[in-house]
Amino acid sequence: MSFAARPAAASAARTSRIDGLDLARGLAVLGMVGAHVGDNESWDWLVVTHGFPSALFAVLAGVSMTMMLTRRGTVAVAAVEDADARRTRIRIAVRGAMLVGLGLVLALLGTPVVVILTNLGVMFWLTIPLLRVRTDVLLVLAGLCLGLGGYVALQIDAVVGHGSLWGTAYPGILVVGALWGPYYPALAWMGYVLIGVCVGRFDLRSDRVVLVLLGLALTAIVTARRIVAISLSEGADPASWWLDLTDHSYSPVEMMTNVGVALLVIGASLSVARVARPAVWPLLAVGSMALTAYVGHLIVIVFVGTEIVWEPSNVSLVALWLGIVVMCSLWRWRLGAGPLERWLTAWSTRAADARVPSGLGQ
Image (tube, rainbow, N blue to C red; front, side):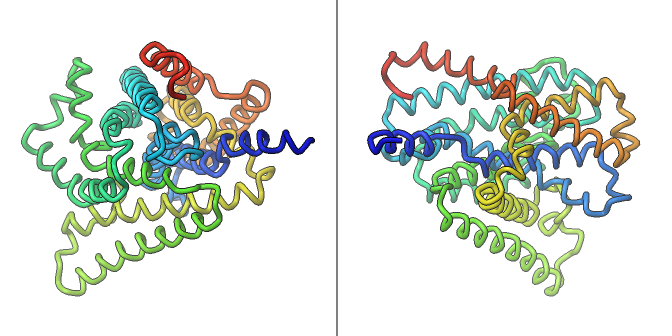
């Protein structure tokens, strides 16, 4: 390689996918599969698949949106040109719409799994005006969502009720209900997404940033546990929702713990992917087509039968995990990007091209 070619090669390396994020996405998807079909009564350690993976998935969604804005971390948010920002907003809006539609369709399959995609699509839309907001403001908003969002969602749900919403035939009402509904309420879960938007602003190729993420992770986890311990020692009601660490309770301490675990997994994944990429490549393949893998496991549940969820077996879980890893690895090796990922990219890019003049933006 000539000296003249090296800058171009270095630039290409900088704009390539960040393997650690793919590894974290792969773990998130496999974790959600474990929550749906795993038997944690036989394998106690499967408790880690409940609550943590879906929260990690939401945090990574926020990271991905910042990566779209900053060309995978090669441009600072403040330096992003207006045309680039407009293109990114369009792409995110279209992707959000496609996720909402896909989630509604998957819900019609009748699996006993609560599909996260519709709610995630709504969160995509809510993030659009916040992409270039200062980091300190985003952290305040994230703190409000994590600290109060779950409570507000519960109060609205108690007044409005979700029975008519979740049983309705009107998709528009379902989408609005995603703000406060009993599953993945956007009022609370936007905290995860906004934390991800902030994480995406770090130089995720830096070893120092990995250490920062790990430090923040441990601080969040320990702080949440200490809040519970101190509150109980001072006579707080053990049944109080504010101190509930149960998965999907959406209490402040549960969500703070989930943030800590998400940062821990992201930081560890960034490090492991650098030093052991060949060993974890199959998991990178899963993460590079996380949407395809997620939808694929729901389709398997439909064809196999809902007994795989109602009567969980870890034999089925391991078989499904292996199937996902093998299929994603073969697809990635031979064909590159996953089918649903290509679909999202193609339509969102086409919409951005139609709105922003050629030659402007990304």
